[in-house]
Image 1 (cartoon, rainbow, N blue to C red):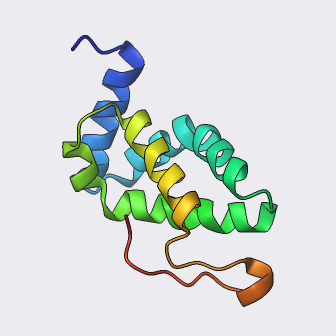
Image 2: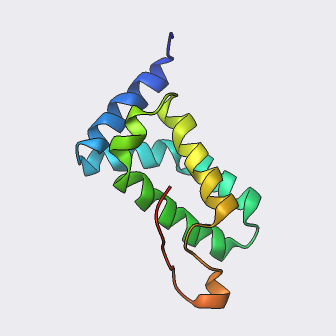
Image 3: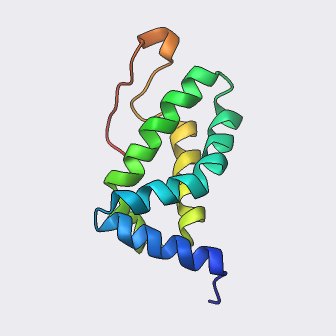
Length: 108
């Protein structure tokens, strides 16, 4: 498969994140945060819910970077899919107005 230059850069960053590189994580976040937030807002029209989900979803990406880096697809495809699953299933968090805090369960 012939990957675009952007996908190659994201792949390098994802492998670095899997190795625990927080600077690479920051760069990957900068590249993909708008796309992931857009997905979350599509499913979660309440901004507070989307903000909570965004934070928790990216923590999940950090914690599961090694597994994600071995899945097929580009990092953008994988991480946007994580955001979509997170928004659809709401793993472990409730509305900020209901609970006042993030309650996290097992990550995706």
